[in-house]
Amino acid sequence: MAAQNEPLVTHLYTADPSAHVFEGKLYIYPSHDIDHGGPTNDNGDQYAMEDYHILSLESPASPCVDHGEALHLRDVPWASKQMWAPDAAYRKGTYYLFFPARDKDGIFRIGVATAVSPAGPFQAQASYIEGSFSIDPAVFVDEDERAYMYFGGLWGGQLEKWQTGVYQTDAAEKEAGEPAYGPRVAELSEDLLSFESAPREITITDEEGNVILAGDENRRYFEGPWMHKYKGKYYLSYSTGTTHKIVYAVSDKPCGPFVFQGTILEPVVGWTTHHSIVEFNGKWYLFYHDASLSGGVDHKRCVKFTELHYEEDGRIRPVLL
Ligand code: FUB
Image (cartoon, rainbow, N blue to C red; front, side, top):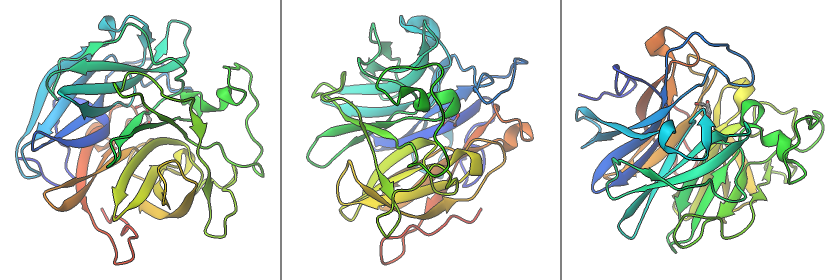
C-alpha cells in the first residue's frame, strides 16, 4: 500500500514526479533513475536516464502500480541521451508525454510522444518541438482549454546558454546583482504538438515589485517548474537548485508576472528537489522526491507524496516532513 512520505516504489529508482488525475486515478510520470558508475558533476552527467515508467494509484492509500516501460530512448529518433523530468497532458482521446533529452548535438530539447492510454506505451514524434530548448517541461491546461508549457533549468539544463535566442556554448553566467534567469513559457498549439508562439521569459518579483536577482539563491528560479490553479490564482512553484528548496510565486495570469510567496518544501536528502501539486477527491497533494532509498546517492532517487494544505488567504502551508 502507498503511504505518505514513503517511497512509492522500491524496485526502481524514480524522480521528478509529475502527477495528474486521469480516468479517475492518480497517474505519476517520473524520471527513471539508473544505477551506474559514470561521472558526477554540475553538468548532470550522473542523470543518465534512458526510459520512462509510469506509475498509478487508485487512491493515495492504494498499492502503486508500475505500468512498465512506456517510452525508451531507442525509440526517440532525435534524442541521444538523458531522458529527464517529463510531464503529461490529455486532449480529445489522446495522452501526451512531454520530455526533455539531449539531441544528437548534445543540446537539450523537449519532445512529445502520444498514446491512447495514460499508462502508454507512447509513440514519439519524429523530431523535438521546434523552438524548444532546456529541460523540465510542465504542461498546464487552463479552464479555457488553452495549454501552456513552462520549462527551463540552469547548469546541466543549459537555460543560461539561451540568453540570445540561440545556443551559446560559452555564454557568461549572470552577476549576482542582475535579474535572475526566469523560466520560460510557451502556449501550445491546439493539437499540443508544437508551440503556438515563441517561448517567453517569466518575471518573478518580490512583494514590492522588485525583480528577484540572480544572487538571491533562496528565491530565484533554478529548475523544475510546476503550474497549478487554486481559487482563480496561478501558482508557479519551482526548485531553487543550489539552496535545494521548493518555493512558489503567484499571479492573476498564467504567464505572470509572478509575486514570490514562500517555501513549500525545505531541502530533502540528495542535491535535487523536484515536485508536482495535484488535487484528488477534494484534497491536495505534493509529489516530491528524495534520495533516501539509496542512502543519499544524488542520482538514485525515490518518489514520495504528502498532503498539502492552504491557509485561508491562499498561502500554501510549508510542508513538515
Ligand atoms: O532528473 C534530472 C534532473 O534533476 C531534472 O530534470 C531536474 O529537475 C532535477 O530533478
